[in-house]
Length: 143
Image (tube, rainbow, N blue to C red; front, side):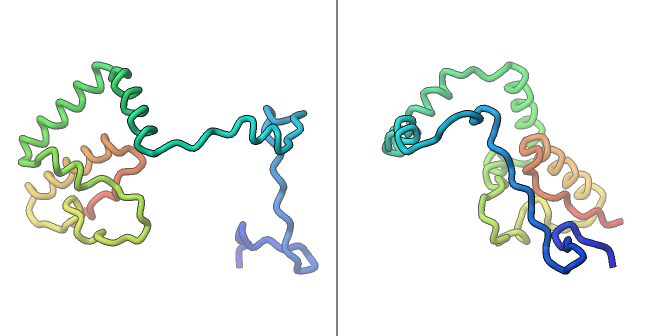
């Protein structure tokens, strides 16, 4: 049986201690006491005020022209395929880990025919462009 990384034991049968991580270099030589912690602690604010300030900052930030062009092209491609912009919002990955509604995802439903397979592949590639590493798993490729 192969040794598993999480199941390492020494010759006596006791588990090996995991290494203790060092403090980051910017904390070396810093004496952390309650006064230091509370001096740099942020005051509590109302969530609506925080979100409003974030919205103002986002409105001041300009998207690169290339990103806007890519988004416009994506919307045009989706319209050609008969999809709407709302389809993207419905397909956003959720932060819940319960896995509910994973069978009802509009891009992973099994279909037949070469046209439907190609459409599904195009839909998936568009999701990958948008969500990158957070994209859903690709649809099964049944041949």
